[in-house]
Image (tube, rainbow, N blue to C red; front, side, top):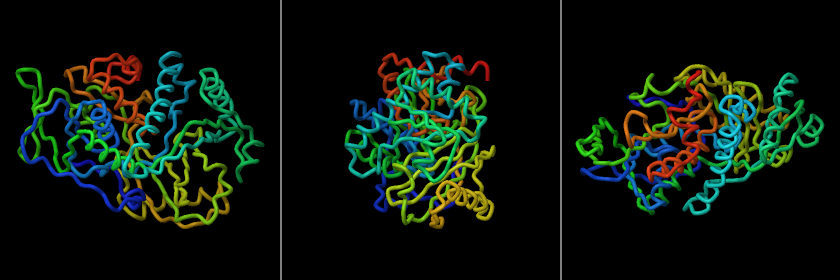
Amino acid sequence: MTKELHSGSLYWPATLTDVPSYPPLRADGKAETVIIGGGMSGVVCGYVLAKSGMPAILLEQGKITGGSTSANTGLLQFSNDIMLSDLIGQIGESAAVAFYRACKEAIEQLVHMVQALPVDASFKRRSSLYYASSEQDVPKLTREWDALRRYGFDAELWDAGDIAKRFPFVKPKAIVTHGDAEINPYRFIHGIAQAGTEAGLVIHEQTKMVSCTIDAGGGYTIRTDNGFEIKARNIVIAVGYEPEQLRGKLLKANLNRTFVAVTEPQKDLSAWHERFLLWETARPYLYLRTTPDDRVLIGGLDEEEPQPVQGNLARRRRTEKLHGLIRTFFPALDAPLAYEWCGTFGESRDNLPFIGEDPLRKRIYYCLGYGGNGSVYSILGAHLLRDLILGYDNPIARIVGFERAALADV
């Protein structure tokens, strides 16, 4: 059964009318690597492998971007749900700093990707304002700024006066990080899919893996719901969230739901300083951004439920609340809502994604981007898995893999 990952009216699909399609699998095949999943992680993995001279076959049970990618909010930040200063306490200084640097490098890698795309992915470099939600959060925010600066990340610390000079709202303190970005995830993935196929990636939509068995020679046979087989040496599972075969065995994660609202185009966004990405220290947190056509996107009000809200009235109660919160930041922004949705997202208990080889089965790899930084994790994961498949050492593997020490205590 297909897991429902969102409900409501999505904004991103409305930004691309000419959507490519890919044929279902119609014959037996063979590939060095088969990728399961046609969302952000799977398509980016396919692209990176193909551009590295390692063409693969990608199987998507529905349509490309049909899952959580369509509900992705398109914020690209090197900071994570867990602060660097807290991550240092959790996994140690060297590993925490390496992980944050890998996230920053992933954004730079994405820059090179979008420059070669056949479509405009609305990629823009942005700075982020990470504000203290209350006076009580100021000490930890200051400690985080100290850590970011100590390890060479481009960050400023603004007080209430600095914020008030640039925005029509006041917060007690904020970190401004530079080097972040925003993107249209829907257009990006369709562009990456097209570029990947031009480099040798083969995509089959409407093709579901129903079984995977190991052969006598150590390879794998994948059987699909339309009766065909593919022989593969490597398998990459990029289905978004925890596959059934891992449930309760390797992962320690939770599925929650979040709400997102997008306005009609606003008349005047000049009060929004440099169109910063906005988010906060409270958990769960609010996040805000603008779009190229002058809309405001706001998300948050997370709930500890795995399924999206299905009732329109129940969902709109939350999204109307989000709509009202826009006015608390920017009183002049009064455009009505145009789109609203509820989406599922995953959080691992140690605040890190799951990317790496299955410790029980050789050459089966996972790219599961748990956390609010899933798009960055997809880029990081694609390059990491390419290295693992090629047999190269990658120090990040020990941080995000399934046998990491951080999972022992959670």
